[in-house]
Length: 249
Image (cartoon, rainbow, N blue to C red; front, side, top):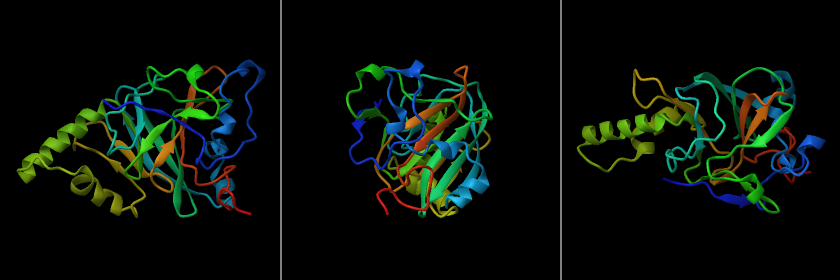
């Protein structure tokens, strides 16, 4: 099984956001240094449009166990699920498009604006082990990210076996043989993929910003620590504003 490494901020296109940790969070990782785009998950459509950010609502991901995996769906569908869980259910996924790219993705569990953000982690990761500008995240090598339930990996394996039987070959390329047609229907930007027809458990697949890289995922929490949203930043824009690319004038 694959494991998630840590990565430094070097090369990640992000800037310091207005959000800063409260005094109660003193000594914790400064999330504002990892993403300046967290407000994307809370802004309304009109505000996002004014910032040249296009909203794409692709449907709901079926979380059968509430254990969420965020990964490159082609390279790491077997990635461990996050330590934090949510109640099983169907949750909407929103993509934020800017500069012709998918700049970020979110999954909503409840309404409201987060009052605190934390870095999403998998078992074995320790926030206190991070040094300097290091952070946890997931690697992308196929230009795609995803959200899915940990149980859905078994359905992906089942689909692979079906394709092997159909082709009478063990040589299966999940992108070419399964995902390509679904993604092409949406300009290669996204697909809400169901590995096995008639079985609960689907995958929100989306292009990852400028492509391959290493991307952080965040939990947005309410005052009681309840998850409101899960957010992935692909480093396409800064300050939740698509009118300028990072580093632009």
